[in-house]
Image 1: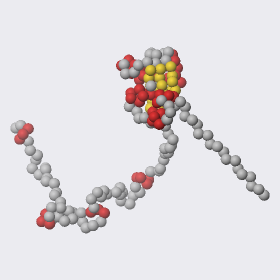
Image 2: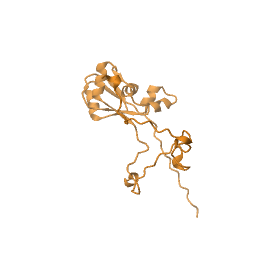
Image 3: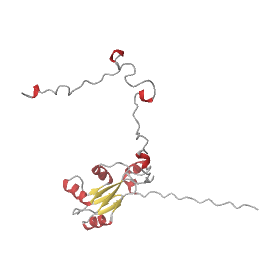
Image 4: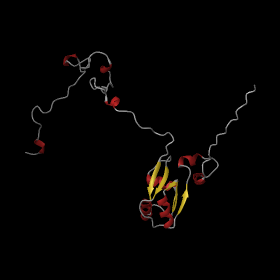
Length: 186
């Protein structure tokens, strides 16, 4: 007995039901789907019916809220930066572009440097946010912090400024001008 002689047990494998193959088969014309209606159409999927019981999506409450102005922030630890330096992936200056490539992030993301781990190399790091512990560790190692104000996508859209400069210039604040109320003459 070898692998080529193995067969499934008799009656274990059934041929699939071939529907819609003519009236002689007994499953022709409507192919076992009955006449007309939604259930006979292609693409029909049975909705979640729980037999009169209140469906789960109606039993559970609505919850949560997604803030419309939420910032996508990619976090980088000091330990990761040290590892990148040791592997030779970055030099003494780490820009937002370097962080984007190394973190596999998008152009819309802000970057925050966190203080988990140790940093022994002297580096200049450009990022949007820094935790206090990260600032202390970078300063202790003899490095510098450069604060970026715009995402890569926002910096690319700034007219009249080079890309690197656009990253580092703060956004202009929108000031709403109050309209003076007109006095009603009586």
